[in-house]
Length: 76
Image (tube, rainbow, N blue to C red; front, side):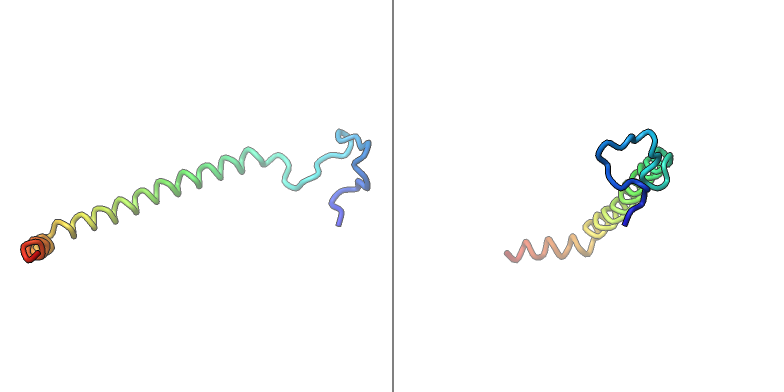
């Protein structure tokens, strides 16, 4: 399958051929969009992990949990 009119690249003058891949000129916009998605992912992931950590800390500090831990240590 050929996407250009070039039959051989040997000796081809690339300045006369034109674009050889689709969406030429959108590279910068696509990079910016990719970086924005990457940053958004990290921000959202940090928020999710912070909520989970706070929930785990709250559960570890609950009076019932602390009482159970101290009772288990006393029996050992």
